[in-house]
Amino acid sequence: MDKQNQEAKLQLSYIEKCASLIMEKYNRPLRLRIQNEGCQMNSLQTETVAGMALRMGCVRVEKEEDADLVIYNTCTVRENANQKIYGHLGFLKSIKKKRPDMKIVLFGCMMQEAHVVEKIRSDYPFVDLVFGTHNIHKFPELFYHVLMTDSQIIDIWQDSSEIVEGLPADRKYSFKTGVNIMFGCNNFCSYCIVPYVRGREKSREPQAIIREIEELVQEGVTEVMLLGQNVNSYGKTLDTPVTFADLLRQVDKIPGLRRIRFMTSHPKDLSDDLIRAMAECKKVCHHLHLPVQSGSSRILKQMNRRYDKDHYLTLVQKIREAIPDISLTTDIIVGFPGETEEDFLETMDVVEKSDYDTAFTFIYSKRTGTPAAKMEDQVPADVIKDRFDRLLRLVQEKGRQNSCRFTGMVQEVLVEDENREPGVLTGRTEHNLLVHFKGPRELIGQYVPVKLDSCKGFYYFGSLQQEEK
Ligand code: SAH
Ligand code: SF4
Ligand code: F3S
Image (cartoon, rainbow, N blue to C red; front, side, top):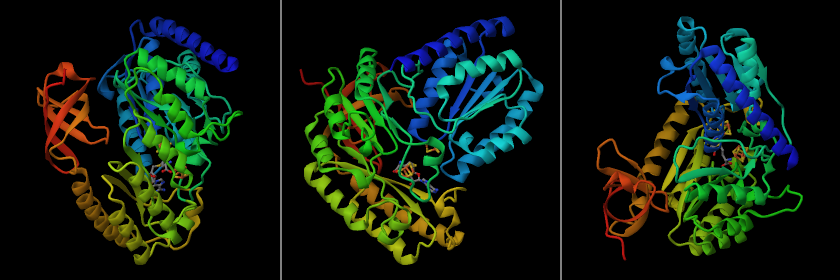
């Protein structure tokens, strides 16, 4: 713990050094544009890097054209995320030609791939700083060296055993936030690059998590989303092991906290005790994201998911028995190598039977270095497209029916934003369903009762109810 604090202290001192150097060199705050790609764990790390940059005295701007410092947190889970970054770099090159003192920083998952770093070294010399997923806390120190030397710095670590606690973050909402409870992944699903770019699974100590949430509550946060690639295996590698179910029970006791969400649950590790904890804990929202990936037991085996169709459907049944109003959502991959029409129909069957509110559907993307990339019978693009369209139709039809099941009821909504139309607010129910309704801006961040008048499929129009006195 001490060593971690020392590292945080060291970086805080580099933040100070950067702040002085920025004033010396630029004589004004740097205008910052920071962008996130990828999952919620990435967003959280983007908020940390943004927090550190703001402490250096940076100010945010909307457009890259206006920025002195452009930072991208990258994702590489599918090929299109990769292509997007290369596209952006071309655009940034043209801006930097006009303003050579602009600084460009890339970090995150894509930077953990050797071929990407090679390409940046050879084709994108105007990128100033590159770091990966294991040394995000080093941003102040690395950026200090960039400012001092004006040369390209690339620092990628292969893994790290420490978790640095206590760095500043600039959160999007003042009343809700994600909290990392673990990093990395040990599952090696055969299609997935995450274990290679995020390293081995590491859990944070429960005390550190609880302390962070207590501090967040002090700052006005009432909803937390506990984040990890597989939260159901949380705590297994700690010196004193703790289960995820027990962590939920502890978080549930924190005074002032109102809602607890979590992501992502791997079906192979979802225990009966977790289902019990979800049912018992008053603050745990009745929403579970349970990625199935495929409905075919044969494909699930090839995917190295370590559960089969029956196991998954039994889990769904158990969860619905314990928490009848639960909202279920999922992720599905179409076109995994060797997927036949028969396999695909098994996926359609799971969608029929599981009654998801939403399913995120992805076309299989071949990731270099994963076992699936070497599998021979890759499915032709036109076959995948046809299956994808059929799946999407079913998912939408079922999703519309399922998410409309609360029509006419009054539910508690956490108000998140004002819509583009002034006077119209947007919030979420505990089931993670969106509701639009008329009300004053001042309600943002508050919990209010809203009658769900009409369902538009995936979201509701509602009306604000008088609070009971
Ligand atoms: N840890 C989470 C998933 C993180 S990645 C879990 O195991 O559920 C988010 C989603 O991206 C996955 O659920 C999967 O559906 C999708 N995905 C991952 N690798 C992919 C690939 N190579 N091609 C297409 N989709 C992929
Ligand atoms: Fe990828 Fe599987 Fe780990 Fe999820 S559990 S991040 S899909 S390897
Ligand atoms: Fe993408 Fe990395 Fe998340 S690859 S999905 S940003 S863990």
